[in-house]
View 1 (cartoon, rainbow, N blue to C red):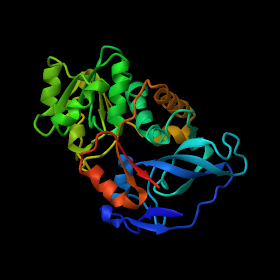
View 2: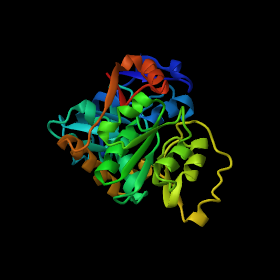
View 3: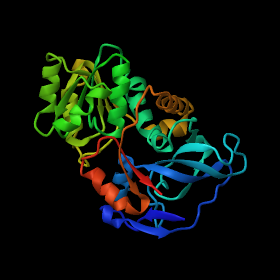
Length: 322
């Protein structure tokens, strides 16, 4: 099979488009012919400097396709089923193997391109808001990177749940395009201090829930934007910087909470999150939630696709098509 591989981490230029051996499913696993690959933020971070499982390495969390073969003991899927899959790596290829517990059926009528975009960002957004953020109707939510996959999902979910929704992005145009999804007010972090703007937009109170996928110095500033009893959920390090040390001295006197979140741990260690992700897939299939796809690239052009994502121009997901 063909795959976008690399032999060392680094810039998008490390990608090579090569023939590699087909993976084979073991007990409890399925082999999937990939039709669409959603490039996740973690994919670009892993390519830049993450752990490699071998040389060549195939990066990538999330992809949708059709089951080609099932391993011993597989009872949830059959050859020919359409599925969307999540794994620690292996999505940037024509085929991948995953455990059946890390695959979900794609409902009839749901396009595989859309299905490929759902589990990680929509599952992450839902748990950040409700499981860990404990968001309630009438509260104010601040969502960083509103034009990204998690951001777009979180804006819709928070608005539908009765929140007042704020989000940050790098341009006024990107923010304007988020308003039909449920954004009440946008903050251009390139031209405005998001803490001051969050306070201004909430009459000085701050945000009840903050979804922070940026990390670093932004995470430190997010704590300054929290309301009394506010909850900040740290879900990523897109800034690729570290706030060292992180000052949490404001949390205790304001009864505030800082929580970390990683969807993979919830999927590995329990069953609750698997059902939650299935609900998000059903919601997109029913039209209750919307997937936004910015553009698609051929799998052979993985380097170009990663460069485009890192230019911060995209609104929504960027796909690779084998």
